[in-house]
Image (cartoon, rainbow, N blue to C red; front, side, top):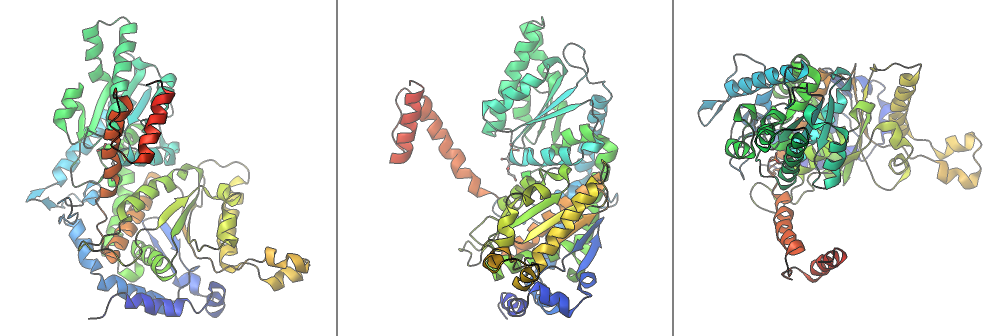
Length: 544
Ligand code: G6Q
């Protein structure tokens, strides 16, 4: 049997020989050839260092990694998150096939998914209609989601992305950081009697979330007391102002939340993949159950595409393979996500967690050090803002940074020709990156010889362009699923476990010991010299 990575070497031999400029000259039809549509998204990947031979070799790499089988193992609930002994079934959260059955430990999970979705729908209806009342009988006007990581980034990103679909008289806040400023500034903006707190924590033990939730609870009780409630009634008010998104019923009840108002999920949903389930409650309140269903439909369409399309016409597979070409073939360390839609401003941050927490691993599935580079660094900002800052480095720097450009043909907010201008930049940047500007072109334009090297653009910078008609719940769902599956494919090819996140544990554990030392009468001095000195400095500043 051949080493599957030979196919990457074969791809590289061809890919490295010609520039994107040359490839376009040779084959003017390549834009058509290297583009496809799926679930409302058009992907043009022709501005990459590829031709048919390169793609053929990359497809072989995917096939020899057992990708087809792995996709089926994920969709059918096999315990592919082996280090935690869990199935990986975020796709079940948006499986809209009424006849489908997906079994984990012999039990179909879909009835539970539908039950929680219906519970979320009823609850969000009652908040949106003003039927859910706070302790003084007032309607809820503010919703504060308290959660971190996967219990925050998805709701934050999607709430902003779908702003045009939100009920504008409801205000949404997201508190994640254990920095008290985050909570304090939020509480300054809301009135307790009109505020609903959603405590979003799968485990209900996360330090940041539970500290913020407890502080919010104290605040609510004290505000209720100020409004004239007895201590008992003020404590009782917690049930009217707090709901939980969690798997931990006991801890939820102990907090004072009515378990009826707990929206469950399951250990087969990873935090960073949990937006289309209970973690999406704040989003469902914002956009309503009908739009939420459309979001799920978009996810589901992309899921079906991913599961059924042959690899050559499979958008997540193609994106993943192009990423591998640059990471492992060209040694690119990062890729850039550039949404040209203000509503997608938080998409790069969301993608960072999805990709880097999933594939930032150096040990393969056999427990050995991975001898290939794995998950890339993901970064990005809304497009035109980036053009006036870091694009310089992408155009003329020494690093190769493949970019994903994401844009929409129609805007929700037409004002004059602003959208045409935005999209002109969107298209022009990929053109500039691919084709550059030669020294001769500069000279023809009369650039003085001493400035020619500075004004020359090498080009040959790879980009993908993702275009949809309009950013809607459906296209957003499909976009998220597209990247989820891209990340999955890369994890399979790198032979790493994409669904655990052991790398975040150590810091959490050490923080407990440090916290004890920050507040103890006498610090233990058991850390390294640097940490001990920093702790001492902090204590001194606070007069401890
Ligand atoms: C995501 C991670 C992580 C998680 C947070 C919050 O995949 O597991 O970001 O979402 O640590 O965890 P809880 O929801 O349990 O509070």
